[in-house]
Length: 440
Image 1 (cartoon, rainbow, N blue to C red):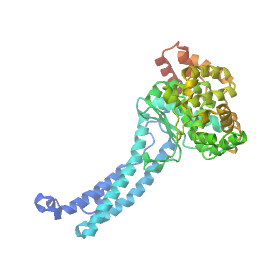
Image 2: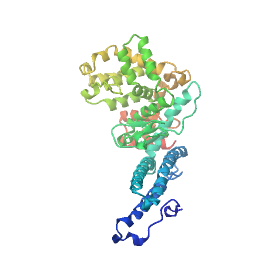
Image 3: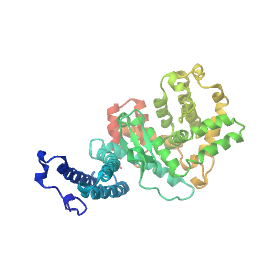
Image 4: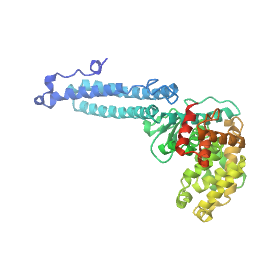
């Protein structure tokens, strides 16, 4: 049925009534009819997405992603249709309506248009996101999807007890901007008209895609989603507070780390997922001017960068990578000597080593029911034997040799190692990195 055939739409006015000489009174029915037709056609045009519309290869969104998004779209369309039908009824009666009726029609017109924008916002957001899977960046994004999925699998397979499998899996996308970001499952987004995002989204800037050795950010952003999906979002601050109290550390300091818990968790999980490579990647990101890296902010949710790196280096020491930690720490101390640390308030620096160990115990080394009675450092393990696998994979990336069954997340570490050896051009490593992920 076309919009003009709908019984609750006003019939189109006679063509003769549209003449300029007919005057405003006879132009009114056409205005009403056109408004109703536009609203109906607009509603019908925001259709659901079809399987295969964005390709069928490994980089395409899978059916569960499409179903989740289509559920959002259909819900928005149903709400919009309520407004559209009310508008159609008012349009049908506008010619005979009094002034109050005409005011009501205009109010309904505005409300229908507002609802239409909300629906289009959801449709447009996912249209743009999924369309990236049909262009030149599709293999890169598909490869990073597999890295993100591998991070999830590493955690869920390492739990002490089985938990329900979260679905859909994370999806990566490219967006301009310096830093990566994530949108968690279930979080309400202004980009979606405050609708709940149905699956984890990981934003990766182009320059990170271009330099795969900088992709330590992917495990970090995925870890935000893991913390949420595992039900640790609200629990972690109290665990940190208890760890500080048990060591006689200041409540004031505990409050700082409680505020930092989400970013701290993501950093520490990133280190456990890909090992020393994460600390190196972190240094690349937060190593800015001395003023910026040591700047203190009473409301920041990220740990002060000058503290953030030593936190992860201490974790490396505790999981068997003291040599790597010492090398990184030497470089960090040369870049940011003791004089720079003076920018951090003295009460924050007081017993900082003890504070860091308390945070590591709370997040990484104490058991949680949410992990099936295990600690995070037992759920995800990066051990010296894994570093040997990374070095072998780095050799293979140099020559484009198949990296076999190596977990996808380890390829980020392998790319960093191969870049450090400087025996192969960055362009070749870039190509071989994504080729390796594409063979999965």
